[in-house]
Length: 243
Image 1 (cartoon, one colour):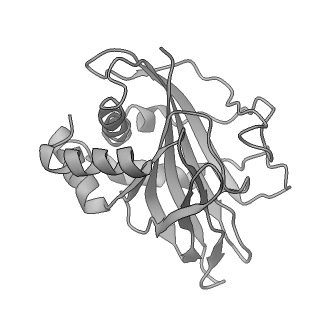
Image 2 (cartoon, rainbow, N blue to C red):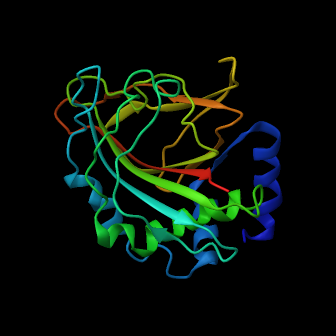
């Protein structure tokens, strides 16, 4: 359960707006209250973004996105998290007109990272929030490690544009920004009307989205200094009710 001092404000924002920005200091406090060892492997967790393969399914021909992927399940009141057998990622064209309509095979998230304290506690942090809205639910959970590169050019964190993911809830967490400008998250209603915008800047900054009620996008990133690698690393965790 979320600490009471954050729980009321956070849940009310998601209920009223359909989304919430949670700053890194609040996230860190929640994670360490959840488990004193929550971030003990943070350095290895962050470093795991450094060796990801290029996404080979970009219909725009772009080579600016790297990613890994995993599927999990949670189905009891204790919010126990179970790793599912590795499987393709699929979105319909309705939700992803650029890359949807095909089963995409991505390399799995490294076992030590997926089972590590940081990843498990971030996933559980989301479950603790979404369990408040769907207390009897069983959850299909998908984790995506993304690196968007902007070396000598722009990188597109959401190449499909303003979109929904086709799930119930989405958690987006900043892992690292290096040598980039922009990358601003924009929130929209289901008619594409802009509701708000904010930028995930610090490690552990999180955006929470009720995907049934809101659409979201991220503005392209550009390098600040062309002589230094430029990239945006995020973890995206989606939660879909299956019963």
